[in-house]
Image (cartoon, rainbow, N blue to C red; front, side, top):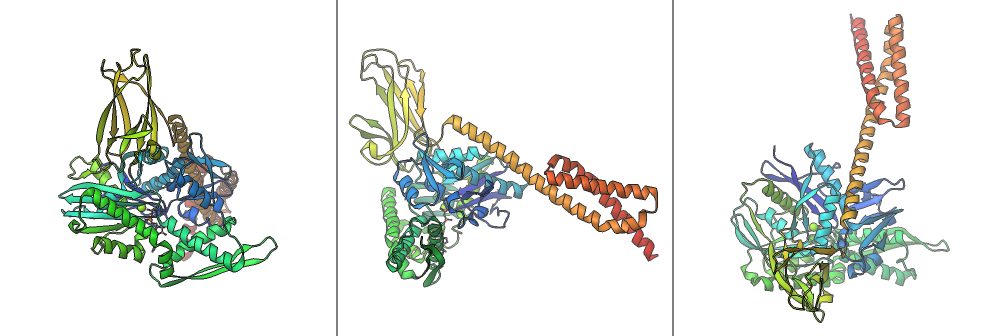
Length: 613
Ligand code: ADP
Ligand code: MG
């Protein structure tokens, strides 16, 4: 039997899991029958972990302990613009981690961002396992094309914590193109425009007979529906302040309700000209005065509030077309991906800019997961005829004298790729060299994203300039960077120490993998207990129901009285075990209960037969 490798679109807002079955890519619905699952994690008052719809359903009453849009923070540093913006606007608590990374606080627990993503991935794993009836251990996971190395590494770590081997990371727009062109034998140049809850990506691809070649990609990993929500919230907060003098920014509960209402109004305005934001009892002042918010919002107003955000995406489209060297007129199709592309102004602007009506044939919520599943199937089936050529979204380089950035690999280079650089010692008897590896497009190193500090050590003592070490920088098919060094004189591999600049250390990861395995065992045990409890209760009910008939038929004999006494004893034992929540004992008792019910049914049946005769 073929291995079950799933494709997962781990979105800022929604996560979707898919698989290829008999050559057909399919979305796997969750237990509630929904095809996507909210990317939300919460802890209930009793400390129970809630993921997906369970977390979303309680967010309005428990905003401090519900994490949403964690993807906006993954692989980011504490003192980044994104970190600060989220810290100011989200109702949950953000703190600095031990490696300058970001940690999230829910009740008395502190989590790293990859852990939160891992909880979501683990949920997807369980959804897939429930559907397939077999364990799922491998996955292809998608990331925004514009994610840098730190964000990709952190996503891979999340998979590992969740007990999933991430066999490939692919870019979301590329995955979408794969699902769009799958099995169609197309020959086309297309643009994929993906605007989701937290990120924007655009990729230009050439598709031809099973080859999907990305020519260029660009994006903004901090631009999506969340930014649109903030604009609407700001408007509502300001209008409310003008009308009532009340500042809602410090009222966490009110802010969460506002966000929810802002998003809902925004979505409604995709199909209606006007919506009303109605939030009764939104705020109570210290003196006990109650305030309600009721504010109409038109499509035109919404467009006015957010037009510039859409223009930002159009600028990025222009940029990526230029670096692809592709003229708009050469494009055959534009594929829209992401929930935000349902906004009429987004559709209008994209159609206007590319001068083509965007393709209507794909489902913007599912196409990325389907593409990931197609790639997963292709990776396990050696006979597939699918070739994916993706590019690195950012230039890779090192810091050189004067704080400048020296490029080694240009952005939009096809991956996998590698580049070498020879380092020489600059002091006599120098035994180590420190290398700062960065990603970005600025000439100044400090303005680019620091991926890691590498220390090349154990160099031969010699006059300066005599020791030469060649360092090779590689970018894998996952878009992940690695570094290797070789002593040019001896040909020996040199040891390199990597310092994490964000994310988790190997030791922390190992510990989290262990914790997560323990959690799964506990979760399975509690599910098993629940299953046994329900079975037990059903059997006890049946016994109680049948008891009067059995008593009537059997209490005349000693054998009968014994059997009834035994049955009553089994029920008492089961009730004790239920009260103690003793799963193991319940397992044994279930069998006795089952035997008793079967015997009782038999007696009851015989009795009714006798009565009919
Ligand atoms: P992600 O991939 O980041 O998880 P999605 O593709 O699921 O995101 O898109 C989620 C975003 O799309 C949210 O910001 C949501 O408000 C927005 N959205 C969903 N439906 C609509 C709609 N009908 N009109 C406008 N925006 C929508
Ligand atoms: Mg998405």
